[in-house]
Image (cartoon, rainbow, N blue to C red; front, side, top):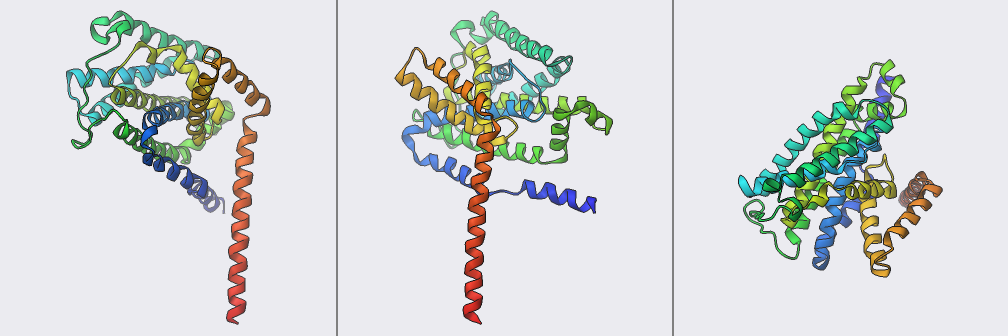
Length: 341
């Protein structure tokens, strides 16, 4: 009986629900807003970066304060690839993903040793180390002046990156959607459920036969690939790379994004990116010098309220609408059968 019910449960959780469909329809509908493509492109890239952090923080319980290491590595790899090898965006994207996957695999053995505090310091140290290397190797990275002279070719040989950001936003949104589909499939698989078991109780997960370290290394590598792709998109759509992509500020911002949207919830990073960018633009327009203070205040309020309450509210609304719809369709069906009788 359990052998039948468990796969059925996993399949039911993997099914698409109407809020998800509405979310992505609204996202692709933004392509019809030509005046907002530049800011929407930034949101899409930030959302992918936040999604990569959520994979390790929300589902595996790995806290990182240096996740910008992979964003910056992907950004520089894509820029150097375009300058010295080939300006094709897709080839540069694959090169950045592969390089960041190797970097994530190598650093995972350091990050996964010790407690959460040790992991925090190691991730922060890796990002700071890469930032200093990029600063010192000015002959390769441009140093403090940034990597300049990046020229991207046409996307798929057809679409040129324009000043209005239409091609850039379409490109970033499609990549975000495809990688989200992959992450969604991964999280709802037995592998994803084993990650949540490790996050909740690693000792008990190991006792039931889950290879804890191998699973954590795998998801850390996947998250590094996602962050590297986000960095590559940032370089390709702006055609510039600066040292700020490796800064602590980037890691702190993406942590705020995940906290605002909610960790352990794939849409949390996406919604958090949208909310963070909106708050950043709105608050910086109201108080240019103190917008960080107001975002910090909002963060404190979110912590006091609890990150699960907005999610429970969303599920409550979804359940109410679904019940009302079923009741409405059921009453219509009953009325039609009565009328037919």
